[in-house]
Image 1 (cartoon, helix red, strand yellow):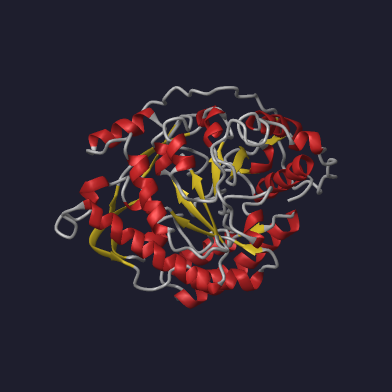
Image 2: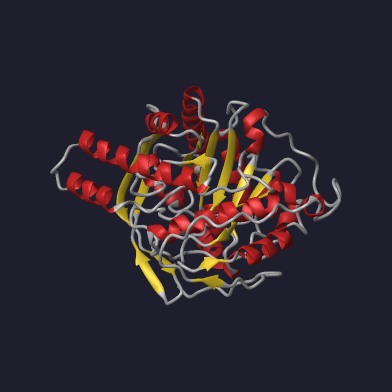
Length: 426
């Protein structure tokens, strides 16, 4: 697959600084004044109708300084996982190693100043498969090669393929035990990340879903949504107030070649965003009122490489106005993500987390450059609806991106420092 030519509007070059060791926490720049907070169109001008936000703590989520969720696995955890797969230790012993590593990554997040804290996805191999294959009716069979791109060329990666061989059902809670551990281990807001329900459809399409079990696709979508409602209800009952759905497919539908691939599988790339919005809305329809749900759009993230390119224009109207989530984590780290013009469709009451800081490369962005890019975004959506984060996770698979733990921490400090400089708080 050859690279699609990137298309973008108003992209500002960002200058980087290479770092090799964790810096000391930099002094915080003074907060911007009220005039800065009023940048962008006047209140109510140029934006769709207001959307109500969840009450109390949820009104602060996503946070001004936030992150997608996954972190580099420490060597000790990787060794424990290898020993487990070789049959040298049992599952309980592996979980002890996971618990210890998670306590460490929680401490790191708290120390840099993040208000939303995850377990780093340290109990997973892949950001999506570990969750989805625990649904009844879903298995992994074989693999399919996906071509990822980086700065120097292409990488072929063959993740397992999910197949739907039975009725999709929620047999038991999937993330509740992990959430309970996270909640007990942090003083901040515990955040749970799970794959979007669309992840069971896009890559395999109709051919990956048994026609015997599901002769009609609407029954499949209904069952997937019901399974997700059950999981979200279980998380809500356990006290989860911050949930993120990780979705590659809406971002892939911004890429010309991915759209051609969808057509080849018999899907209409112009209609899929609306079908996916209905699926996600049905999946989250019964969420507790105090729970905030965001969606993260990802163009692929494997060992510092990506799959898709293209701005959000093909999906923007559906994404922002038909998807009933509270916020969006959007990749905006370089030209392959396009410009900020699609943000003009964001309604009041929803937050957009600008993924301006690369989680793929070691160069450290500069605060002044990030502030300029936030200013550019604020021409299309009010500044008070914006937040900042790295563009993706640091380790969407167990393999991790090609950066060091020190760089990872420095990137998070940069997000916190910049958020304080722009909004005066987190």
